[in-house]
Length: 433
Ligand SMILES: [Mg+2]
Image 1: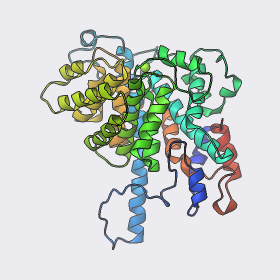
Image 2: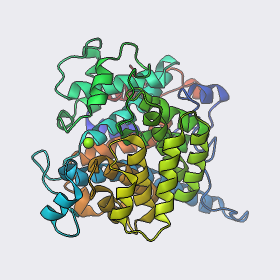
Image 3: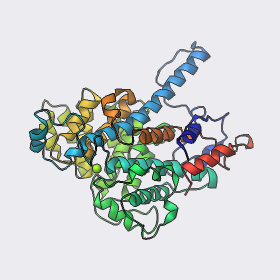
Image 4: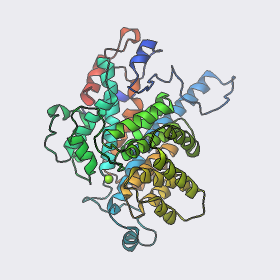
C-alpha cells in the first residue's frame, strides 16, 4: 500500500454517535475503550469552560485539543527516535570516553553510527512494531470481531525478528512478511538488537504467551510508549494501561522488573496524554506499580530518581547513582530523572545519553516522555531532518492516533455501513493477522 493511501486512511472521520454494541467491539483486549471523542470526550484542557462559550468556539477548542493530542503522539515517537539516534554512537562507551571524543559537553549532536548520521536502533524499530501490533489488533477486531492484543503484538515482534537478518522464524512463516511496516527496507537493518528479545521471539511457540526467561533488561520498557499513547487517548484506566504495558513487555522479558517497568512507562505516557504533569503521572504510575508483587526494586529506583531530581546534585553525578540503564528499572529511572530536570527537550535527551551505560535506550525513553509532554514542536529541526525513517515514524504515529476513527470492517454497524474501499486499503496496510 502506498503512502498516499495511508494518508487517505487517516483523513476519514466517523459519522454520528456509535452504538454501545460498536463501542464494545472497539475495545482492545485489556479494556481500551476506543470510543471516539464524540462519545467519550477526552479529558478537557479548559477546566471550567464557560457555559456561554459558543458552539463554534467549542468546536475550535476541541479541534485544537485534537491537534495537540496528535502532536503528543508525534512528539512521543519522534522524540524517542531522536534520543535513540543521539545515543546510538555512544551506546557502548563510558562517559569518560564520550567526553574525550566529543569534548566537555559530551555528545550534543548526531554523530555517525551504523554507517550514517541519525541512525535509529532496535529501540525505535521495536517501538514501531509495538505500534503496528496495536493497530493490527484493532483492524482484526473490526473485521473478525475478536483479537488478542498480546498475540497480535507478538506477531508484530516476529516481523521485527524477521527484519534482523533472520531468514525464517522456526514456527511462523511468510504470513508475517505482510503489511506496510515490514516492507520498509530501511527497517531491515541490525542495530544492536537485544539478545533477550531475539531469543524470546525465536522460542515463541504460542503467540501471546509470556517469555520463559528471567531477563529484566530494558528491552521491554524501551518499546512500550505506544501502549501509553493509545490507552491514554482511549480513556482506559491506569490499572488497565499498566497491565497491558507489562503484558507486552513480558512477551520477551520474564523477570517481574522487566515487565513492571514497562507498565510504569505506559501509565506515565497515558497520564501525560490526559494532560497530567509528569509529577502527577508518577504518583499514579507508582500507585499502580505498588499493587504488583515484586515491585520493590522498580519502586526504589523511581523514588531515588525523584529524590535526585529534587536535589542539587549535577545531572552526570545523579545519573551515575541511578545505574547504567542496561536493566529495566535503571533505564526507566534515568529517563524519569532526565525528563523531570531537563529545561528543554534537547537538554533532556543530551543528559540521558552522556553516561556510562545504555545511552540509546535511556535517550529513547527520555525522548518518549518529553516528546509526549511538549508535543512535536519542541524537537529541533536539526535533529528531525537527518533522522533515519523520520517519515515512517511520523506516519505510524499519525495512524496510531487516528486508527480508532477509521470507519472500517464488517463489525461497524454505524447505520449498517462502513467504508469498504477504506477497509480494503487499511487491511492491505495493516492486515488483521
Ligand atoms: Mg538500541
